[in-house]
Amino acid sequence: MGFLLQAIMAVGVVFLVACNTPSSGEFVLYDFETDEELNRLHWHCHTLYSLSDQYGTHGLRSLKMELFPSDYPGLDTILQDRDWANFSFLGIDIYNPEQEEIVISIRIDDKNNPDYNDRYNKKFFIKPGLNRLSVSLNRLYTSDRTRTLNLETIRKFLLFIPHPQKKVVLYVDYIRLMA
Amino acid sequence: MILSAALIILLGLSAYGFFIEPYQVTISHVWIRDEALSTILRNRVLVQISDLHVSRIGLREQKILNIVDQLRPDFIFLTGDYVAWKGDYAAALTFLSHLEAKIGVWAVMGDYDYSKSRESCLFCHDKDSGIFTRRHRIHFLRNNCEKIILDEGVFWIGGKDSEEHHETPYLTELTSQQKKIPVIVLSHIPLLFEQLSDKMDVLILAGDTHGGQVHLPGWLWKIMGYRKNALYNYGFFKRGQKKMFVSRGVGTSHIPLRVCAPPEVVVLHFY
Image (cartoon, rainbow over all chains, first blue to last red; front, top):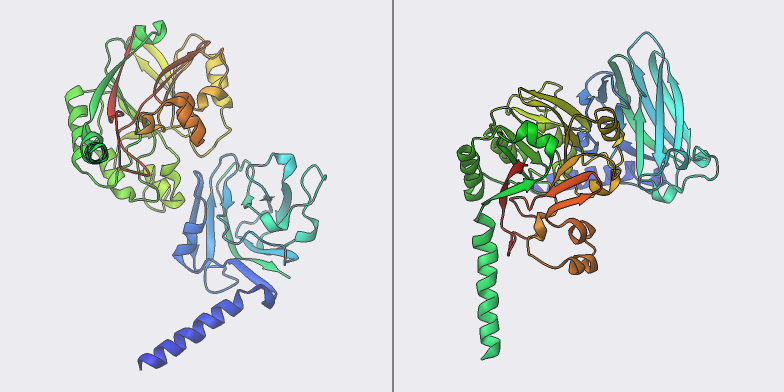
């Protein structure tokens, strides 16, 4: 019985590792299935994170973000995997439950505390309903267009709404790197 | 013989540093010349407590609470680092819930308080909620300020948050627009002193250095790469209009040792 249990666990571990290796062409950074994943986010004032059973696109759950009026409320990740060089795209699924389009910004840093011009910044229009964003990693230019980001040293990835005037709710799921 | 004597001295010093001095909480009376603050606060009791690093309510924490009770402060200013690195936030919150002052308690957070990002929210909110906590009555200042209106006059208390390293424009604005209103700024890190203009008439209360925990000369801190200790290890600093007091704090980090840098509860006096 004990042997059988161990064998099942071993298969499970192999399966999980196989799902998350670059060779499979996809690496899931966050799929927001467990409470532990909320510990891998930076928590700031005016942003409230919780796991939701609604709008999950990978697994059963998604991240519900309640963004309150302030400067830049949003998702601030604590990255464990900082070498993105083997991948071509960053994928993010965002569900907008509102009736109107929302503008979000994505910021990616390849060094600590870079100036605005020395990091990737881009706006995305999030339509009502499900939005599947795909950011090409081969064209991650800094805002001053003088260089592309070093994908081997990604430090930060943020997704936020600049200066919302009212509370905004977004559901985020399946943040992944794709070959 | 000499070796044995040296060994005995070293053992004695270690025993003192680990088991005696960290628990010898002293009251430090600090006198600061500031005419404007003196006019408003000369008859008030202002207490600064820094770098608690609470992991449980033990002997040291109980002593601090007793001292605060005896002092019956009008104001308590807390300058960050309430928890141990990635430690237990519950003990720190319990300690904070016991702090009371007649007018109020104001605080900023230190880098250790952000060591568990999600838990850091507990200083202001109920768990995983936007509801403000009722566990304590402390005003946490996160790059903002509050105007304090007393019968004797008005002053500002501002707070520089440890997490946002470059956001001080509100302080500049505060001191330039309110030239006649004194400003006290709470900052965990003493290096804020260098970020503010010499023309700013402001008093910074800071901590973070622990007075080194072991009293060493500045040049030694510099060699070891501890710039904040090399420049602002402990005490009062003034450059131009700006002033700063750096407390040794009460707790310890890295090594639970203090030698010639006893924990202190600071009582501020203005003249």
